[in-house]
Length: 121
Image (cartoon, rainbow, N blue to C red; front, top):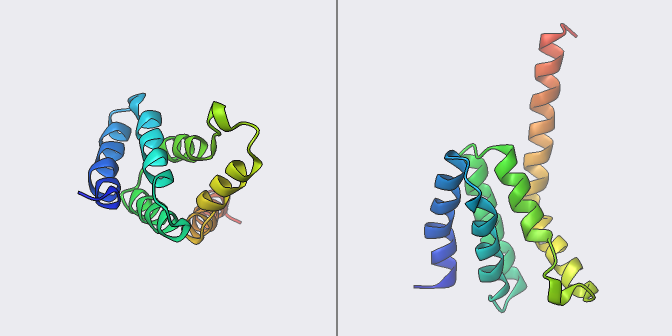
């Protein structure tokens, strides 16, 4: 079984199950995802897997708390690498993606439309 297959199938399922029962395991799930992604030699492949996971979480209407925990976990530095600036920037570059940008824009638009409708603007 490949790491990519494990992430996109098994780990994604764990994240969704854990987010639906409000467990503290979500952070651990994202730590596992982070380690799996770090083990992939190609940054492009890492980015593809991350975007696939993120896209599927969004499609499943994963709650914002789960996404926030995931984003925070994915960008957090490991204590051994706190002086490694390339580590910090590479994880920020990984997490920043078109899928996340699109989701943020769409969510903002939905919230603004709801606000306008509720206040008759």
